Image (cartoon, rainbow, N blue to C red; front, top):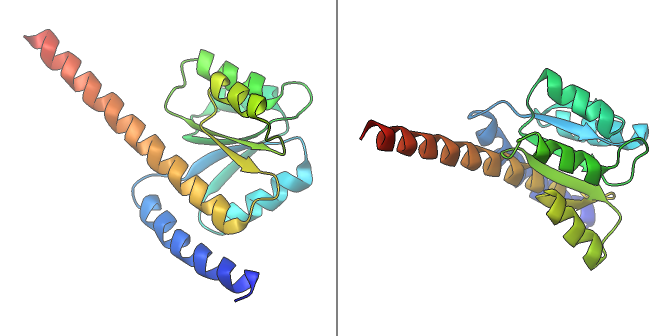
Amino acid sequence: MTDSQDFDIDTGVIAGKVKALAAQMPLHLLLVDDDEIERTLITDRLERYGFVVSQAPDGEAALAELSKRDFPVMIVDWTMPVMDGIAFTEAVRTRGIKDAYIVMLTAKDGEFDVERGYEAGVDDYLSKKVREAELLARINTAFSTYALRREVAELRARVRALQAAG
C-alpha cells in the first residue's frame, strides 16, 4: 500500500468524525504562523473539511483576533517574530481562556521544549510537516476536548448554583 492510499483511508475515517463533530458545534479555529505559505497550506487543507480558519502572522495579531471572537482551537507556531507561540499561549491563559485547545506547531522536539510548552498551557504538538490524516485527527481531538471542557464548566456552574440555593 502506498502512502497516498494509506493517506486517503486514514483521512476518510477522520473526515467522517469531523463531519459528526461539525453537526454539534461550529468548527472555527485560529491559525497563527509567520510563514504565509504554511498558513495558506494548512488553511486550504482544513477548509476542505469544513473548518473556518482565521489567520494571524504572529502572537500580537492573534491576540487582536481573540478580542473580536472566541476560538475553541488554536494552532500556533512556536517560532515567530513580535510574539512567539509560547508568549502567546501564556497571554491566552493569563486572560482566563482555559477551555480553548492550543496546538503548538513546531520543529522543536527536545524534552525541555515540550515541557516549557506544557508549562505555558499548550495542549498538544504538531510537526511542521504534519500529514493530513494526523492534522485532522489532532484537530478532531482538539474540538472534542473543547466540547468536554465546556460541558464540565457548565456542570460545575450548575453544582455551584444548586449548592448556593441550599
